[in-house]
Image 1 (cartoon, helix red, strand yellow):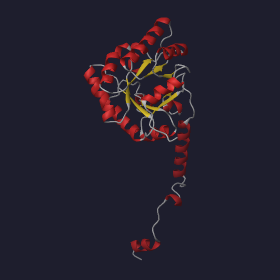
Image 2 (tube, helix red, strand yellow):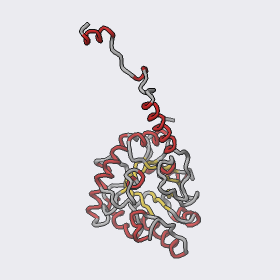
Image 3 (cartoon, one colour):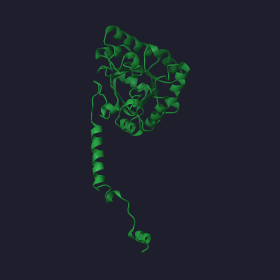
Image 4 (cartoon, helix red, strand yellow):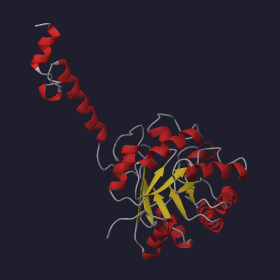
Length: 280
């Protein structure tokens, strides 16, 4: 069967059939091409680009223009995967009107299929307003990087009964508000299982155990390209940073020793033309 564009309906159907959903991040055209060709269901243009690509300490400085820029690049490289764009900090927190306008830009200007907002009950009204405007919304609860100042840093959430109850309630509220899926980050696996069972929409885990309806990782973590810190939940499938350094070192050596460029890498000109140039 020929592959087709993954839709929200497809993702919801996977939950019903108990088929796992796969999602990875991408921030540029070549990465999007590779992720899409690998058959991944969904691509997230995460504001994690701030840390893994731009070298910032956290995600807070990202702007709408920067996120639109990266989303456009990913959209150009994606044919089949469902595309979700992270709404950056303070792009949906000030008013429903601004939240709708900013969310709409990701679909109208950048080619995204949906947007993602962080928070539960605190953003329920904004989620509902954006959905009513015809824009699909993915939720995000647990460790929400945009509120690390309130959370006290990158810490596991829902480690006690009170915190777990709040997460379950947040998930239900997001579903009621119209979210079509929820990312669950850095919470104990048993709590993620309870959340997944408590809602009818797909849950996508990152550091939330195997019982979520799907899994997402930051691609730069998976590839070993970002090593400033490696979260416990990351599985590094390869170490491209090491391979890149080795390739760069070989290039440097070849240039210094005159091995590159060799004849096969050079353009040629007819000898007669050289003679004409030399006046012979």
